[in-house]
Amino acid sequence: MRITIFGSGYVGLVTGACMAETGNHVVCVDIDQDKIDRLNAGDVPIYEPGLDQYIERNRAAGRLEFTTDIEYGVKHGLFQFIAVGTPPDEDGSADLRHVLAVARSIGEHIDDYRIIVDKSTVPVGTADQVKSAIQEQISARGAAAEFDVVSNPEFLKEGAAINDFMKPDRIIIGTDNPRTTELLRALYEPFNRNHDRLITMDIRSAELTKYAANAMLATKISFMNELANIAERLGADIEKVRIGIGSDPRIGYHFIYPGAGYGGSCFPKDVRALARSASDIGYDAELMNAVEAVNDRQKQRMYTKISEFFGGELAGRTVAVWGLSFKPKTDDMREASSRTLMEALWAEGAKVRAYDPEAMEEARRLYPNEPRLALCENAKETLLGADALAIVTEWQEFRSPDFQLIKDSLTHPVIFDGRNLYDPDTLVSLGLNYFAIGRSGVVAN
Ligand SMILES: NC(=O)c1ccc[n+]([C@@H]2O[C@H](COP(=O)([O-])OP(=O)(O)OC[C@H]3O[C@@H](n4cnc5c(N)ncnc54)[C@H](O)[C@@H]3O)[C@@H](O)[C@H]2O)c1
Ligand SMILES: O=c1ccn([C@@H]2O[C@H](COP(=O)(O)OP(=O)(O)O[C@H]3O[C@H](CO)[C@@H](O)[C@H](O)[C@H]3O)[C@@H](O)[C@H]2O)c(=O)[nH]1
Image (tube, rainbow, N blue to C red; front, side, top):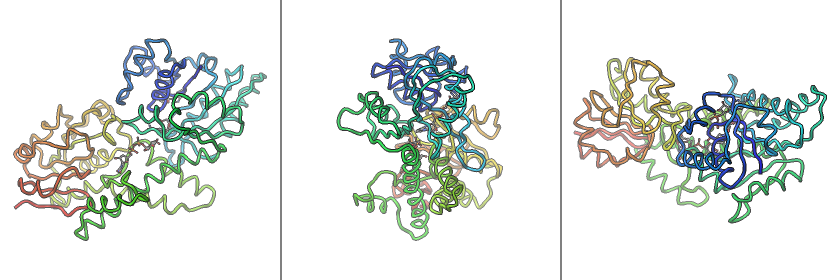
């Protein structure tokens, strides 16, 4: 089938590569010329495990093209996917500027039946706006063209995106026209083989399903972080509590890891946008507001612990930071907890020596010429001349470090662990002070 995808970011590239992998002819359109040039030169601008091989293979087979030519894109695909960003506006609502720009572009060039498939995360009612924006452009040209707008939210996780797309838990199709259901069923058939995962519903419910899923997951995390802060003060160990409650199948072990707060391009903005949508219709979404407030506080926890340890005297200190991306296996630093920590440390006159296996280029882009940030070649190098070590992202390579080296390198033998990677007893027996999340800190004698 012929598919066009607007937006070549995390979602657009993964969707394009996976759709091409199953034999479709995919054209990816982006307005970022530099990004398209890189993709056409065989360079994948983001880090997502496995994505580069998928892109290379399908580009070579002629099934995957990259262009800034909007007209070419609109003329190409029966399916026109919208996978552009919906960043938070100043008031927390989703900024639909890019989505509506794509809709207008489609309206300017559409001359045959098209199915517009919205994959971006958008508030309830956006499909109606997309429909109007397309129709306005068609009418302005004095033309006529038929089209349908479908909501097909995406649920992939960064770092596991290819697998999530190839083997989805569910494929949500929100539509008001049964013929689009059948066409989308055919399109998704290769991803829906083992058992039927296609769930159809009306468009507004599909749009809300995406926010509901992210808000539920974010709620689980904030709940655990709240509990972690209580456990810490009561002398309980949140890791034991986590195992204790996860064994109840009604709770489950997924998404109950306490930590340095959730980040990324989805949970923070989507919880905010849902609360904002509610307040726009006169409903105070108290739980969503609390989920966000708990997370904002949690993202400060690492800083608070470090500051308390040093008696509030951070000026002139240097902190080694392991992990900059918002989670392992991605280079994405959008709303990453590492940024909250580093910026709080800098504000108090401290310096940071940081390392991340994949996000160094992104860190350089976000903090160009930042004199208070030394980006190091590897984890060991961050320790040189540092007073303390803070672990923000649980990359595999941080799980079994050389603790003796850490102890010998730091001016103060102290680890602040934002992801509860280590056993407190082992660390204290090695002479390290250790402060994690939701457990009492241990101080070596
Ligand atoms: N990142 C994720 O894990 C994830 C998962 C599920 C859903 N989503 C949702 O999918 C959407 C896209 O997210 P993302 O992380 O891929 O975004 P992204 O920022 O990585 O990529 C968006 C791309 O769209 C391009 N773009 C902007 N305006 C355009 C236009 N008019 N025409 C063509 N291209 C245009 C940008 O240049 C950019 O390359 C968002 O709504 C997000 O909430 C993201
Ligand atoms: O138990 C947990 C699980 C996650 N996190 C944090 O939560 C954030 C988000 O993690 P994750 O959900 O794995 O990554 P995303 O790529 O942001 O994926 C989420 O957001 C996407 C965009 O909407 C959705 O498609 C996915 O289904 C949804 O999981 C990260 O900072 C994690 O460190 C925790 O703190 N504790």
